[in-house]
Amino acid sequence: MISKKEALPGTTKERIARYLRVADYMVKEGKLEEAVIQIEKALQLDPKNYYARSFLERLRSQMEKIQQRRMENGEAKTISDEQRLEQISLLLRAADQFIAAKNYKLALQQVAKVYAIDPQNYYAQAYSDRIDQLIAQEKRTISLPPSMKAPPSPTAAALSRFEWKAGERASIAMYRELLKEVWFDGKVTDDEAKELKKVRDIFKITDEDHKELEKQVHIDAYIEALRIAWRDGVISQNENDVLQMMRQKFNISMEEHMSAEAKILWAKSTPHAKAAVMLVDDERTFLLSLAAKLRKHGYDVLTAESVELALELLQRSLPAIIVADLLYGEGKMTGLEFYQKVRENSRLKSIPFLLMSGISDEFVVRAGMRLGVDNFIQKPFDLELLLATIEGKLK
Image (cartoon, rainbow, N blue to C red; front, side, top):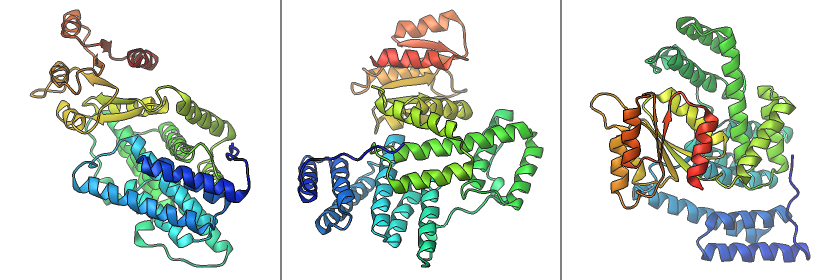
């Protein structure tokens, strides 16, 4: 699905001038990302427009300097998933502009910057493949810089960095991460297949589990690519070509594509598409799984595996709602103690706070409710119940 590009009345020159005037106003208002979008609309009309390209380069340089200053001041040590996607989207849109101008070297440099943010971004890898195709079509050879090369496939030594700590659930999570690595370049070699078979034998992962996890990795990678491609509301021809390459590599059916695209567009239109939910739980597999489910329903998610880490994140981020487990192991702060610290902080005290627990003791539940906890959700719980509870509290 490719949206029609926005059209303004008047000649091409007049329309370009209007976009650039809007961009100039956005810069004065400090809305740099919105300004970039306006300049890119002008470049869609005339990719070789010198003023627009110069304006865009100066603006990107300014944004990079601001980001660098934030890093130096310790303000950007961690970024939210929403911010990460926005940065990647801007870089790949820049790559699109360079591809349109047939400047493949600069396009590759933009993709390299994506790898610096997310070394295993499948969409960026697909962009690299697409640029290689275009270069081959023109019978030109441009060697990729070291930063552009895909990470090496996992060997037996690389596999050793994964630790199996929590039974089969942990082994499944570990195996999923291995699948992400081996599929990063869009194919699995014979040696990689043998290594994966060894891991399945060690951890008793069935062939059925393997097929299900492999499909999940492919679908997740494609959904992530769609989220990036749809950030500006328009999918360019080049983006469409890259997504088609991913569908072929990962055997994504048209039904799966339509379903994924519908979810992305629904998330963009939902009133709370950008609401940030903080999840705190020391069971990593459960934490990551729940975070992924909430993201698929349009929420930005911050995760922490301890109360202490959550309190550190809250110094830099302000979520719309907090969902935390009750217990975290001997000697660790509890969810109730976490709740009290949040309520004692004037900056955080108005944030809705939900507690999760596998304990069904009514005394514990009543104690939490008396303290003021907004809701108590007993594990295991139905996802729809949690979504409804979050939605209700955000309203």
